[in-house]
Each structure stands twice: as structure tokens, then as C-alpha cells.
Length: 72
Image (tube, rainbow, N blue to C red; front, top):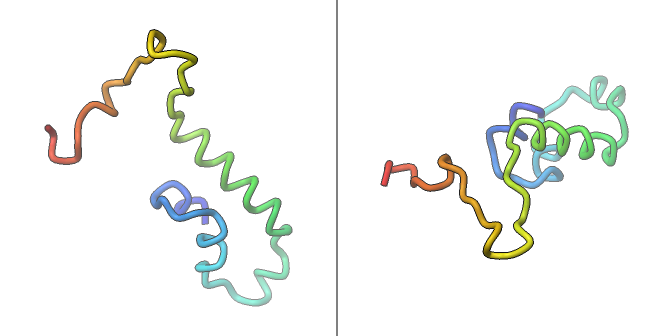
């Protein structure tokens, strides 16, 4: 589930629902709210998006957000 959280843009509920787990394993997992919190932390650590600027004067676009997937 952590890999899916990092590699997809699906919301956390979709990631949890789409995981094909053995019923024995799913019984040992924490509550869904705790799973969502864990997946949210994984995304935040690995995709540190810049914070929202307070004004246009503070707007700085990092280099990795200036190009499209085509390299333009």
C-alpha cells in the first residue's frame, strides 16, 4: 500500500480498498483511519511539495515543476 501511495494519485480510500489482502492479514492491520494517516505521512515525506505562498511576491516555482513530462 505504501508503494501505491507513492506511485499513484489515487485517494487513500481507493488504495486501501483496492489492496488484495488475505482475510487473515487484513484482520491484523490497524484501523482504516490509522492506515490513512500512515499513507498520508509516506506521501508527505517523499513528495515535499512547496507550501502555498502567502502572496504572489513569495511565489517561487521549483525547477521540477517547470517542465512537462515531454520536457517542454
